[in-house]
Length: 324
Image 1 (cartoon, rainbow, N blue to C red):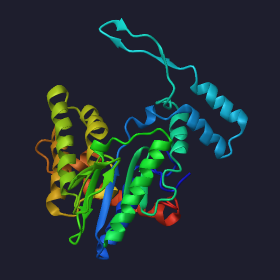
Image 2: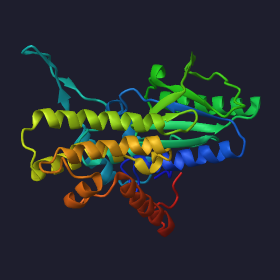
Image 3: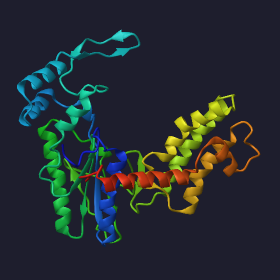
Image 4: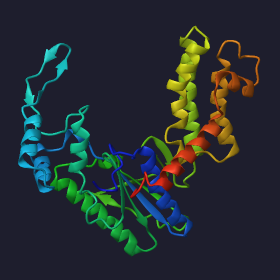
């Protein structure tokens, strides 16, 4: 499997994808290069994988005919219909797509797009169908090379009956000396963006994390407010599990990538946990540190530090070998 793929892979995740990709980008920026990133979006990727072409790929990579026949039998004779206001459409055969929610579906999809980056000179990073393309652009030749790689991806998509949602594909220009060159996909000029939501994390053209911190805190506060209004009980056994399950994940998703360094961002995230611990009965008059001690919680800053150490340990020990 290509080292560019981070989706549905052991020891790979959204976080490893983000860290590996933007580590490369930040190194190029630190060395004085301008960098262009192209964010690509496949239209209904999992639903449009053509079965015949998928099976041809499986045979080409060396799967036995017995296995290929078994997969073919598993995919074929599937039907679907639509129900609107109690009215049923006729049944139609499903000729494309991997069954979502299945164990085998994600693996088949990964195998289908495994050769997506072949022949591409720029850096390609993939998480399932979310694809990013980037390279330093210090000259017209660099821009031309990136455009050629984009054209190559368009050719790949056409060959394998996949389709890019051009309206959702964007370009982000990074670096103070960036030429802001335009790029086209299938004859359409791609829109420019100063901020993108990449695998659920807000990334801007300065590679800052303040907007992501604000968004994470806002989402967490919204859920916390729902708990406060909707749950009558203030017992620790009720509030604490709800906080851990529904609120804190918003503050810690892929946080080893976007962990805040500015004081006000750190305070903004911590403020959510301060509010949450005050909801518990009997904690209202205690200081934040006392509430944490009684509830057996650490500050979010300490939890991020622990996560940083675990992630670094995995890198050092080789769990994340060949990340790209």
